[in-house]
Length: 240
Image (cartoon, rainbow, N blue to C red):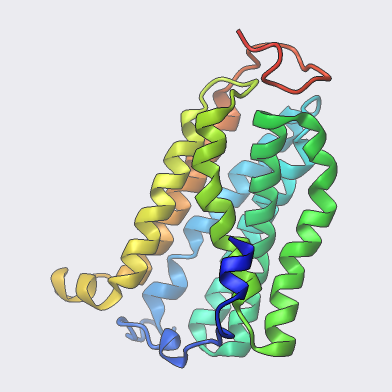
């Protein structure tokens, strides 16, 4: 996937990306709906961080911490971007998103494939942040796109081919499904805005759907239980 993407020409930021369907000003807030719907990310991040102390014996505790912290930071970063959309403000939206993607990927690898993947958390976070730095320095988005889409395209394979040490694994599938719907609604921004008679746009719906998937992860962490003890050979070795 890396080679296929990097054999393509340089991908730069399309300036039409900043033109959202719903540009209404409410109570002095520009692009108000796209700004205020980021409260869903803040709520998901706070709820998730409150569950992290419960994971004190889990190898992936710090990965979950960085995932939910990144989700929390998406809220102000995305709100700032939508307040005044341009390439500069977009940096603060994408930076926590990139670290969140990488933290989630480490969680999947550590809980499904081998718990020793948790050791890759710091390099993974730095790789996610580096994808934004490379874009800022070179205007090339290929590395960022690889970070985002390669992880989510391979997550279904991990969920299918390996078993987790924990119950309620459907939380990951719900998160992935909501993310797919969120990307679809983002592409249909104008169409959804017109179909709802300008009640809300596809991008505002994207924020809600993406946050809904994150709420699913929070709930999964809250209610799940360990199914079998940690094995030095990886979680699938002792799976029933």
